[in-house]
Length: 262
Image (tube, rainbow, N blue to C red; front, top):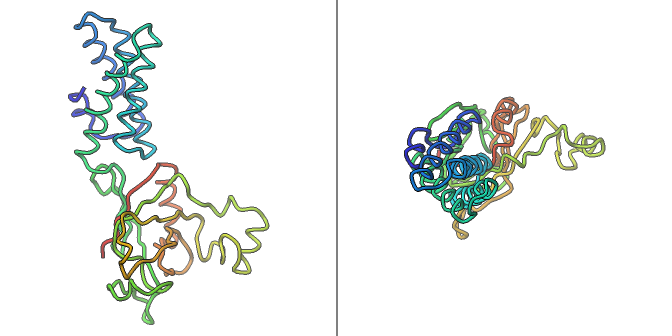
């Protein structure tokens, strides 16, 4: 099972994961036959366990979630084919632990964002796949941006402080989803999108601090990743007109880690 993981690596696209599940089905079926059991029971445990582990990974689940999900899938698959639930559960655990979770860990977090004050990088399985121009904080008089440690301390003016954050791309907030009352309120700088698309762009998502020191003098919150017509923000990561492309790529893909390092 770990050998299959070595071939397929960390979680990827649907077709990739479908082939992975098939490979696990054949492998676990063969192991079952070698141990005097049923090929189809072993195949169902391996295939379903692998598929569930892949689904959990796609939703941003942790290694622990992938392992437990693989175990439950393996048990269900075995039971559906007249086998023992717990034997299938063990096979599913093996698939989840020594394939999905292990290889996701070896290749680093599957989905990461990195903001350096110039770009927001999209990183998948340890590789930068694309980047978008982005800024944070209020611009200076000459139009440039100051990302110094001192500037990071200034609430509603300075850029988002350096550190580790989390972004749940399943929970984006879209201008098009707002009702008439909220969109009208935005015209008067009120409501959920005060200033409308000029200030926020077409979509935004909350940024949540991770493991921050509560005594950090730069302690601030309420940040989002958003777009807008004019570069600059009160500390959010502003993609300006690149927001549509960013969200089209990342929307509904689970939780991403975000690192801010200037």
